[in-house]
Image (cartoon, rainbow, N blue to C red; front, side, top):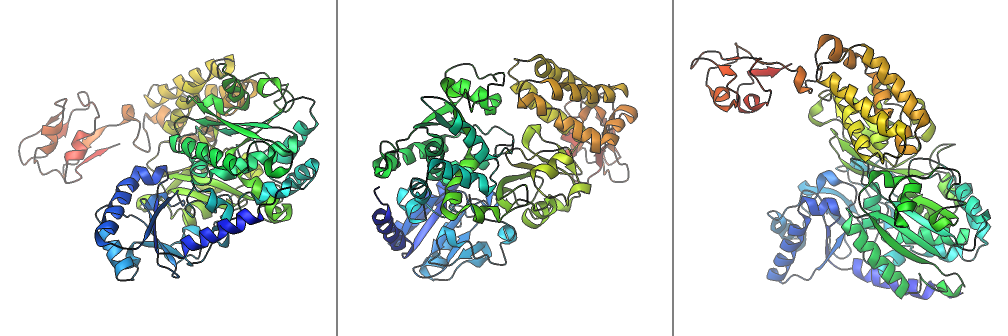
Amino acid sequence: MKNLDQIREKYKEQYKEKIGKTRIVVGLGTCGIAAGGGKVMDAIKEIVAARGLDADIDFTSCIGMCYREPMVEIALAGAPSVIYGDIFADNVEALIESHIVNKTPLYELACFQIPGDATPYEGIDIMDKAPYYEKQIRSVTSRLGRINPESIVEYIATGGYEGIEKALQLDRMAVIEEVKKSGLRGRGGGGFSTGTKWSFVYGAQGDKKYAVCNADEGDPGAFMDRSVLEGDPHSILEGMMIAGYAIGADEGYIYCRAEYPIAIKRLNLAIAKAEEHGLLGDNILDSGFSFRIKIKAGAGAFVCGEETALLNSIEGLRGMPRVRPPYPAHKGLFGKPTVLNNVETYANVPFIIRNGADWYAAMGTEKSKGSKVFCLTGKVNNTGLIEVPMGITLRDIIFAIGGGIQNDRPFKAVQSGGPSGGCIPAEHLDTPIDYESLGEIGSMMGSGGLVCMDDTTCMVDVAKFFLNFTQLESCGKCTPCREGTKRMLEILQKICDGNGVIEDIDTLDRLCRVVTSSAMCGLGQTCANPISSTLRYFRDEYEAHIIDKRCPAGVCNALLVYTVLADKCTGCGACLRACPAGAITGEKKQPHKIDPAVCIKCGACIQKCKFDAIIKA
């Protein structure tokens, strides 16, 4: 079998040569570009050219600290790299002047620094200013923000394709047993043993088999898969190749949502580069194993995240779930045995084969091994991408990594698992993150979204928001999901509008149980989780809406009354002039009044009042 050593040593030398120079690297993942990273890159190129500076300019992906984007890394030859945050076109010149010209890092904008000769596998040397990483593990995300994701040179130089090289020297079943021994469970939400799933496909009868990657990430507030695809696309290819070899497949598909154009672009480039280097295609590394990968762009249907609906979509059919059994392991894509895992699952595989099952199993808990990538969003200070060991508590994630709740407001709840997950209250903040523990408190791991909420969040409104999403995304194939989600949404809207009756709570609870137990696929079976969990932990808010006709969080507009505080109102007239409905009256320099019968509750008066004299309750 052709050996990678010569290629690897050559590319390692190229990588060492690169990191031995003065360089400027801009974060150009989707989050960085959205924050203005493209303008930062243009400004850097212009300033470096104008000053005649000898510096390499490159780009990378998201390093996880989305709340500090745009981000820039600067390293002088032989000196530590310094990662800067909140760099915009108007402060680029000051940064370059200080760090490159005067050789003095601008530490007031620094996030952390990395030893100058460190590779992604040697971890991050965190400064005191970056507690964001202290409780994290960088495994799947180790290359994110550390290499150019469009460079196969940098992937190979940092251990890339060592996993497939090692796998090709093993018996196929030995590869499956290694994955099984590691304890890796599917990171798409189900948590099924990856090695066991592979063994089913390995043992299935068929003249053709497929490996499919589910990259149809559709949860609101989720961008785990997108970040890995954009930042380390070769790791997905390598993971799929190892799976293909293990199960006896020669073809794979990546089903990626079309809303991820950067990810698709980098995947296509990675496939082309891997084929060019003989790492993908026919007779890979002279081993006799052939494997090709195609990309299918999805049209944005959330239900296509369900594995059988995804397979239908690849085949050109309408994206609707199939009745199971038969399961994809026996009759999947084009009727052939198929292994289907998500992005994060495949990204773990090369590390497991490269470093060994024991290395992976040493992380996490007894039943939930390894690490998990999460997106931390909502009312938390440090929004971004994190990778943590299984078993870490929600408290550590939200307060130690996430930096607590914005504006020091009280924490109220966190929703895990996307629109099909449950809302977890403060009393369960010390719950460890693993499949079983989250299930016991009425939530789920899901693919890895964590949405934090403070005391200004109405839990009835949250349940309505997520159910509205799943109701719109229901394919309509089965009656429990099609009709059940509609009826539950109607009741929630009725409660938020102030028209609810106490019997609605029992009706919601019953509908939750019926839809969960009878829906055809995972979308319908889990769509009631936001309702059932908020009924379980925040029943008092439902009762306040129904009995008191009051929204405790001041969110549900139909239940709000706008009032002028006479002791604070100066009679300036700003609110009166701003009111589009003419609901405010009053003389100049005298306290004004709002007529609730005329008020349309638009909030314009509150926005205009400079004296906090108007409240809504």
